[in-house]
Amino acid sequence: MKFYSSIFLFHIFLVFPPLFGISLGEIEKQFQERNLQLLSKQYDIESSRAQILQARLWQNPTFYMEQNAYNWKTGRYFDISPKGQTLVSFQQLIELGGKREKRIQAKSLLKGITEYELYDLTRALKYELRSAFFSLYYFREIMDFYKLNIRSISETISRMEKSFSQQDVTLSEIMRLKAILFQLENESVNLSAKIQEQEDNLKLLLNDTDVTSLPKLELNEAGLDGLEPVLLKIEDLQDWGEKNRPDVQIAEIMIQYEKTNLSLAKAEAIPDVSLGILWDRQGSYIENYYALTASIPIPVNDRNQGNIKSAEQTVKTSELKKQLVKNKLRKEIYAAWKKAYEKDAIYKSYAKNFMIEYKSLSDVMLKNYTKRYITIIEFADFFDAYRQSMDQFQNLRMERLQSFENLNFSVGFNLLELEKN
Picture 1: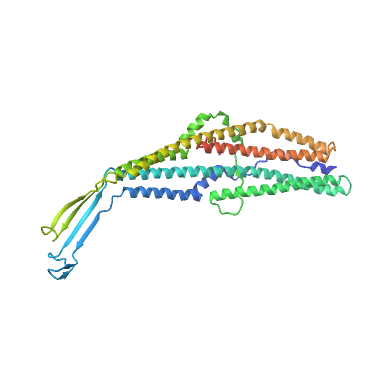
Picture 2: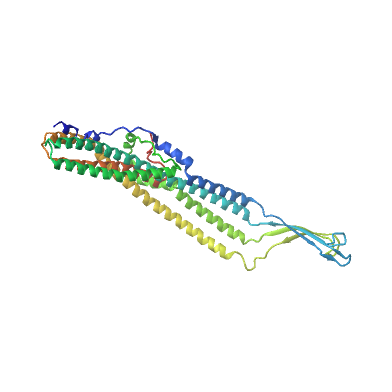
């Protein structure tokens, strides 16, 4: 029966080279240039620069003028003549205790925090971008597997239905194959929804409003197979994480910021001096009275005690928060390293022989079914096991890369170069 030779063209065991269109590096470049969240965060940095500029400015001088409304001696209103009374003064506030310098330092530290927040946001969004890239890449590979099988089974069913009238096959065989086809089509629909979700995630991160699908994704799997997380030492990873993670740097700068605020609070206890000049035409003991003025508040009751105490407690809080961030970081890195090691180990235990062995077995099963050595039930059971194994193996490949990316994210830089060509 010739039609059996077309059953399930088991060349699906082979990995078909995709038509490469866009690489992870190209995706990341578009992301850096077009992501709206990153662009908006740039404005926050510009805003912090403006705050530093504002902190550098001196207090504005104060101008005071007094003019008599009515001069009863001359009978004039608002008499600005030499016989009228006019008083003019200028005053400038002089801040003591280095308050201005401390405010500039505090604003500069806030700018540093904003910059590290940008790095942290970039890190988080890149993790989301790369995860979506890997998921989409492998989901599409699984979809290719489904499409090829659906086409092959559909063609086989068509041939079998033509031969059914000649009683070469039974109705049960046809219905069993249709059940397999139904399952494949149903799972392909579910997978299509996942593909669309990942495409939408990528387009949102890239600020891409095009309704068409993304082009083929390029991934150098041969290079990825050579990555060895087992060679990494957990102690080194944790030390690198403390040096590279933006959230650790933010926690460190926050301590400096709060210490600067404490220093500023202590400086606020030092009273400021107002210096000025005054001219009084008729209101003093002589005409055209000139004087220098100075005023200073006397710190009898308010010596900024409450704010100083509050700032001291805030410094202690920021130090504890930094320690908490470091403790959390070390646990995150250990968990990420452990998962990457385990996923890589199980992948490499199957990667070399899994597909080859399944290919050989498929050839045997195909010959046995063609020669009627096995039934449709046995063949269908084999195919179901094969389908599940293919799904799990592709998911393992995807999860392995995701675990590598999670380790990169936890450490704070690309320890494992996943986009390397």
